[in-house]
Length: 115
Image 1 (cartoon, rainbow, N blue to C red):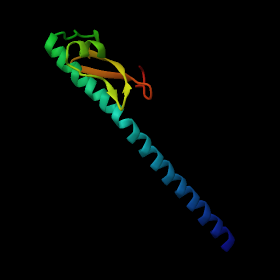
Image 2 (image 1 turned 30 degrees about the vertical axis):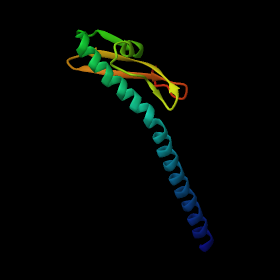
Image 3 (image 1 turned 120 degrees about the vertical axis):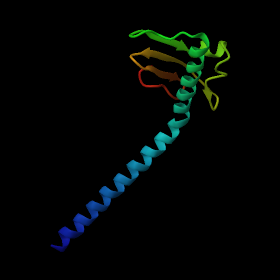
Image 4 (image 1 turned 45 degrees about the horizontal axis):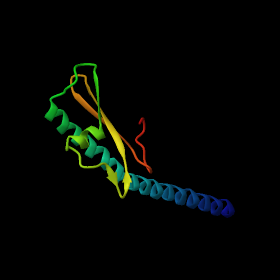
């Protein structure tokens, strides 16, 4: 009986160590993506200013695509880069009762899912 208890404690310790290690790795991975997620937010905010400036709102069901190059050319966005990693991107603006801005960024080290 004592032998089974020792084996159980060892397995429980290994499982607990694995869970802790995976949690730490997950948080580290999310932390490394934060600057790129911030670029997506920066792109969305620039697109909102651009749409207000140009007054180009889509109608219901329409999709308006705004490229990062257009935002830079209109001086609404200075650049889209992080730590020397130059990026490109676009924003899809849709209207279904509410305006939805979806930003997509592509860099050497990161790409938004669905780009």
